[in-house]
Length: 315
Ligand SMILES: [Ca+2]
Image (cartoon, rainbow, N blue to C red):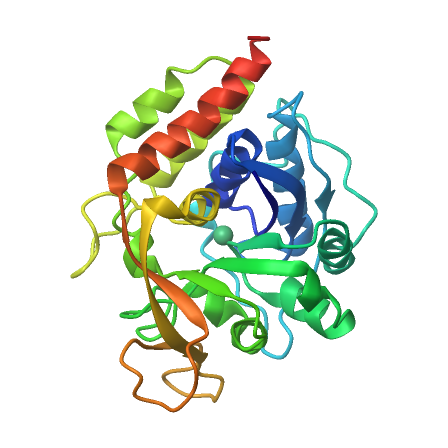
């Protein structure tokens, strides 16, 4: 059982990740912290609160966080990604009250209370970067950071940069350069885990509100898939992959590497430069996930949602 804090920007795939963390038998989820990313900072907090409410009687504190990145102007995602699934204007969706602690201070409190804490990042890295600057001793309480951020190959927002990194490259540079052990889940790797019809059907067949929301979110994510030269055939699972890999490292194959973030302006702003071959004299700072056991990862997601489902059925 690992103590885990999920920093995120829900976001439908973040929300599935929250549910996976709440249900996973190997995870003690201690807090969900949110910040600006796909949506504005107040909306991501609301979405996390809606997601956690769907998992009752399991619950966890939800914090609101950074309103925008450290230096750059805030980027706004295509709203199309989130037209369905989570909608704070929907009266049928209950929500938990937000925790009074700001995400930055929640991260610090969790690192103090749970030494060896695993932090999973599935949004921009602003909150954790601010926590490391505001509370330097936080570093000593964090055992590992697992990031859904960056790519060894092509970007997802620009040709060079993946979305989570591009939203706040300076924050990502602070996190990857922190000296804390990092497991990086590049989108090249998470793209191999599909949200295929059988996966959606398995989740949809589970009873209870957590599974119902998870199935709705997964189905909505499938509608956002875009074809491309190297795009996978199916919509990838992405964010939940980081939760599942943190909970069970046996799901992934990793290779040690040096990862640096390009923070100078220009075409490569926000690029994760992944050096697998020791081409620099800088020490390795990441275990980079290069492959997922796809079937086992899908099984792990279904298993985590099924555990919430059983809890809600009183089984
Ligand atoms: Ca996200």
